[in-house]
Image (tube, rainbow, N blue to C red; front, side):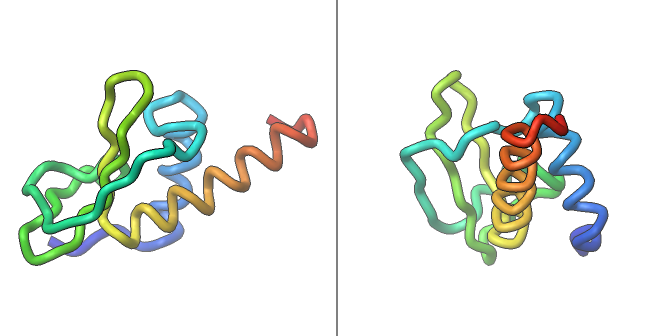
Length: 90
């Protein structure tokens, strides 16, 4: 199944960061490997075995995992969210 477009994913990432459904800081430990078939934490589509999966060790016990593209979008959205917080916009 095709992933949603980048604009939709960026808006979704910002919303999930805002409600703390995605991490609000990049966890220190990250792992990459073959997709596990589990859903991506951003787009919620399965990460198939023929795709790379990026997985983070969450400090809260959660394990966020992403398609490569979704991880990049989450990190950009997180950077924007953090900048807005520093400027008092959020």
